[in-house]
Amino acid sequence: MNDKSKNASRGSALYLSHGGGPLPLLGDESHREMVDLLKQVASFLGNPSAILVISAHWEEDKPTITSGASPSLIYDYYGFPKESYEIKYPAPGSPVLAHKIGDLLKNHGIEASLTDQRGFDHGLFVPLKIMYPDANIPCVQLSLVRSLRPDEHIRIGRALAELLDDNVLIIGSGFSFHNLRAFFAPPTAEAQSMNEAFEQWLIDTCSNRQLSESEREHRLINWEHAPAARYCHPREEHLLPLHVCYGAAGAPAKHVFQFEIMGKKASAYLW
Image 1: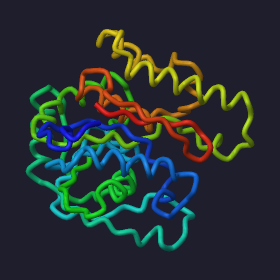
Image 2: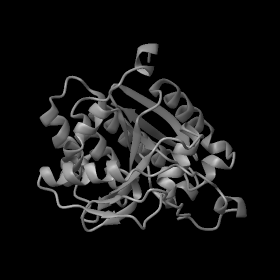
Image 3: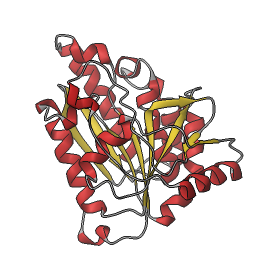
Image 4: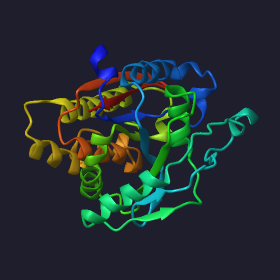
């Protein structure tokens, strides 16, 4: 992390763990490490020309892209304080970038759709309000594909690699640990061990430079065979934004960040 990276014109890919709903914006102490990390990462990423977010909270039959000029916010969480539904993040959309993403996917044989009606969900506005609070960077959001096939999401990422040459920041907004029941269950040594085992597998898979890219891709496609995989991800929608980021980067992560959220080990990856 040096000053040179602040001035780089090439974009980055970042997979982050976005925490529990709006809690990172409400001063929740169990999200303090995550909030501090996102501020740190933003400080050396500098200002991207635009931001593309792949959120765990949007699935469609085919990749779908927000193309509106001024998307609204979708408060897609429940049971939080009134101020949670008054959060503002008036970042502009980018119809031009949205159409370019659609073209890139089409050029790689991937059918995609655009929508100018959908807004930004909390997978976008929660982390970006922390990272870029001025809300002055154009943003576009891309859905997951409902099939939840890991190979398909790596392929989508690979189609988006050209965006990095345009200083676009690609963010995979998910959570490296996403077992909701476990967050509210009494902590046990077994649960902690399973959480840590999967995290170590994921860190090694994403950052080990001794792995070939074919080996790395094979591991990510077959992530269900990782230690405690289905305990940490009963459903994989919060992991797959990482596959898109990896597909775009096609290389080991340059930086790995480890922290705790709500008593669980979590991680983020920067390419």
